[in-house]
Length: 62
View: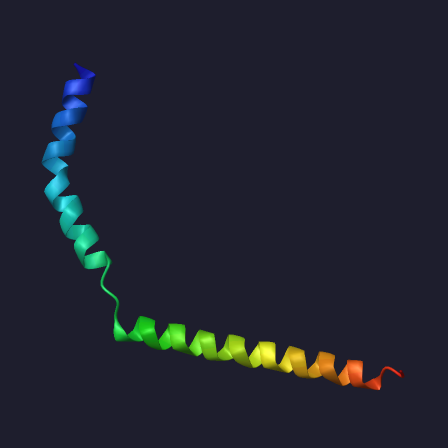
């Protein structure tokens, strides 16, 4: 009997869950701006690390 109640509960709750998931998946302009900003910051950090390493490598005598 519990399985039947569980199954009926899923069918009753399914439309509400689908509406929530539909709205939750939208990408906003704010999310795009944040993602772009984080990507730019990551590229800058990697470029700085590469420059520092190249500077140390250039100081090594051959």
